[in-house]
Image (cartoon, rainbow, N blue to C red; front, side, top):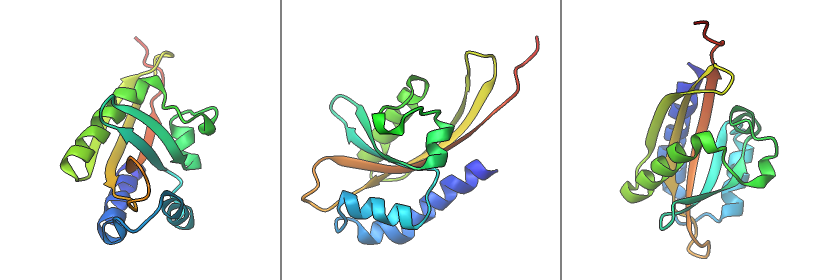
Length: 147
């Protein structure tokens, strides 16, 4: 349930706040807005549509824990989520609209990870190069299935 609340909250934030500020924010100002609003499940990604590369620009502490980032300053997404993030960011950038993804992955230890994520394209001040996606990521892991 919390996973859905986080994506709904991000979408509402985009509709009410980010879209009104679109084109008027620098990356630094956007990070300050997110920190002031306590977006612990949020992330910001630099997106290159040409080669579909993604770089984490900012990640909230709960998002870092959910993604199991041992060092959030490495700016790398975990390989198990890379294709979901690439496809979601690409679609959000191409359509100019929020894109939601949810799914499940089987982890190496036999547990399943159920996740929800939203990708929202953000237009920053023209002096800020590149494309940026704002979003939230949350997940829960099941117990090991016996079988």
